Image 1 (cartoon, rainbow, N blue to C red):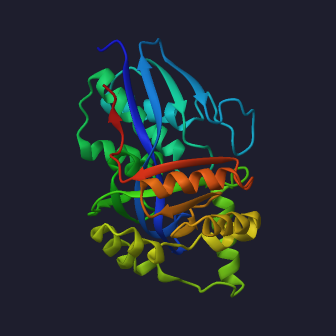
Image 2: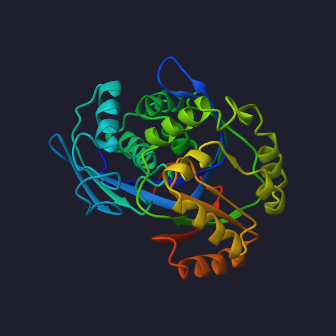
Image 3: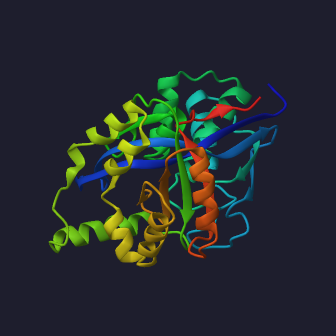
Length: 309
């Protein structure tokens, strides 16, 4: 058994998020295109008697609410450790230290990244050598975004998002992530989508069937083509629940972003830049607006959960 193992996993942006009808299992049918970007959480594992968990960084000092990160068995990291140990038939003995850079409850899949990094780190630490497909199956049991956090890159997600197929993405796209206000509850945003559709304020089913414009833009590697193709069915309900997000989207447009959208269920706004230099300028301008509590320049696609040398 190795003394200490460290893994990291990236944040994600949904460059296309089409939401279909509510399923019998309580989830919505999704047709989404994920992009992993260069903002990472890390998980360090070492020897332990039973499981112990510590959290540092984003969300670690918040006592409760949507921005809080639990340090107990309710954390997805703890659940990932127990699930892998049960699957592999090994004792769940390890100390786990999570260092968060991905903002919490921001629509960036930070919790999913932590779970994916935990699976990779503990598989190496315990020497369980779980087959990749089995590891993806465990990830899907933990959450809809966890399989993509393992895979990374760019991928099409179907089902509730857990069925992941890598897609071609040429070159690198550059983004500025602006977190506007405190976290939004993902179930609340989906609930607002259902309410708006039932009230006739949104089409009953939108363009969930067609992510092809985004896929074509990723294949071309053109940020200019990608901008007009960005789409998120959860943006309107997120704007309803957090009207201040409209100001955030306007700020991104006024600062010169090629395009901007709410990432996932929000409250992060993902602003697309023409290139790396433009992203640096855009981040500096958005940081000065006072609209965002956090601004980060990132790029993608990047690999999914990996061991850190």
